[in-house]
Image (cartoon, rainbow, N blue to C red; front, side):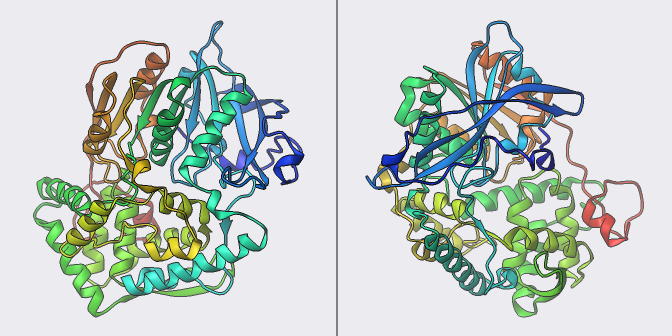
Length: 500
């Protein structure tokens, strides 16, 4: 579902409310403002508002914060149960999706509420900060440098927000789950259907556990269980080997790259011995910056994109060029990620850090990291960053599997390296009234945009009992190496390099 953030840049919702102590305001006061949301090909009718909730419900003197949301109205004469959409990240904005095409089928069945979770999007405060004293070049060099820079950026951001009176201990999945139920109550709804993507599924599971009596169903696309916030290196290795096998079987690339996994390990070793240098433009200073690029940089780029079917096709070419010491394709990726990590989302770090991992999982991560080409690169945030933020640990009771009779629809892609189908199956063990739809060649970001998936979602919302199914997308077509002739896919990174 395509999002159009610029179209909502002037979204005022309701006049900004002061962040006041809890005794001075009632959390469920709503002023719904009618809005028409235009998208390419039509428009949605709806309304927008803000909901005030306590920032930290464990404190009696907690101030209130504001949650921004939009409700799109169903076109049905008698709408079914309202759907709450919970975005991923954590840190993504749901209201940025309100003027995207693709909601029509869902709205033919039910109303849709898109909530900006606490600390994100148009909710207030927005916990994104651009540090002044430290820039992110070191994130791309080696694990030690990455950790030092991560801690320094987190410390500066945390100090900034604490100076504004923000209680960072209130930014946990447990508090967000209570927000979701508070919104349900404020809208006068007895029950809702939850639809989450990625981290949004993690949040949805906590809502089911705490408020299951008010949840009629749950749709989980790219499922992250309660103990899945820190990835196991073995899971990442398995996905990379799957991609390696696809490349080896590719008629164009197979002879040149018979062992992508081995090539990656070789490339990481070369980068440790001799880092590359990539020049990017700092979007804040608008000045060129030379980024030292070592093994941490390559791990960062691959882990961000190895579940995205839009970028997977160019990754073999990227690794080949980096192994050769070339930066033509690499520059595009480094610029893209430098822009993203230039600012720090404290909400992202706080939420993930509070969810944490069990002792057994931490020990397994340590063991597996010793032999994995990805090491502990997907332990995000590292414990040192959580300590810098003062993040509370939600404990192993929170990380225990969720068990519920609520009906559930799980959606997974076989090329999703972030939340693979096996992860969804593990969560599904606690949901006896469920179905799992697996998309062959589907990735992490593309499932909800598929017309077949949208149709299944509408049927599920309508109350239909679905069965397990397997859908198929076309196989990936990898971007060829630049010295190979013949037609093939292209990619923005290749187009920018000026080499075909």
